[in-house]
Image 1 (tube, chains in turn purple, red):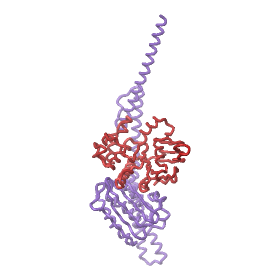
Image 2: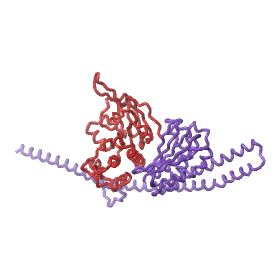
Image 3: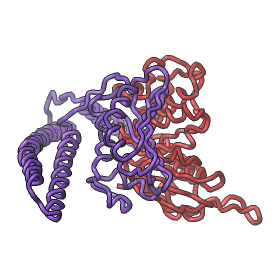
Length: 302
Length: 226
């Protein structure tokens, strides 16, 4: 009799144990499922808190909602910051134009008057530096607008060959002054890619300008290659070339190589070019050897 | 932040007279979002290194740390799961499943893991890689370049911590290879994907942000970020 009771109690305890174990597993699974559902909804950007209770999952929902609301507020703050930058850039761009133009104008006027050679040298330096300043502000304003997404590119299907022809024509006089040639090597039939005409031309001009700067004899060849998914524009020069360890540096902002110290320039052109190409969904590649010229390739997505 | 780190990696194959020191103490770091090329001639140890980094083989000595986790200390099954979730592979042979169509091949790793498929993201990848018209096609109906593009899409689709590519253009003609590499480059940038690619070809390596050179089981140059 006593043994039976012990047995029953034992069985009851075992059943209870297994039952509570199963119950806790089921409830854990339920909680985890609910949490997963919440997170999925949060990822999809849905609002999800529909009811409130004393459960922990409900408290979690409230916290998650609060967190998402806070992120919303910080997104707004970011937008405000960006608007401020926008205004600042617009101010810089506008307000510096007149003083620089005046600087150039007055130095040119000064140059026309009777000057001794020493004074003339000074005026030339002022003119050169003003020009550099104008280019610099221009490039920085462009860059900053691109980087902050204030100015967006509008890539559309455009002819690559026609842009290359245009850029070659535009840079011809500058190359000619140095006694360099500019050749184009275009494939039969037109190659088109997704690009923003104005900005792609800007990028290419910067690359070609750079090539002209660092080439003393020979010239620059612009060619177009057609791939299944990409169009590639290469700018090949017969200039001084770049050592392998210096290649990573050339795209740096204001990063100029030792070998280029005596050339005019501010060290922003290639960086700007690369940013533009990147925003168009393409990329740039360089191959070069010291003394054997360089080749810049711009890959644009079709 | 370093997403991948190797510390004092050594790999010795064989014993006694047949002993081969494939890696002789390699240290390297890869930052999040970097595109790194490891360049070396055949026999330099670059494939061995890639296998260690991907948890396909265990180092004799040293650590491989991916997202702060030392994978050389994990158990075999744990490594398998870790690899499936965190590492994307792109091989010379495209390794697509022949009976599955393009879309199914791309989402296969996600499905194997029982995770939810982010349809918009997958769709974006498919568009970026120019495969939107080919979703229903079977691998054998595609050109080599297209097959490799599917393999890239598959590697990108589950947002791995890192993609390891082993001579990804080895089986393609140079023109198609250039195209595929370009896609790898722009999609890495677009999706902020970290990539480590090994190659023997200097021209191909130029595309990376940084070039690491390996000779005879040792790193001889770590390069600079571009």
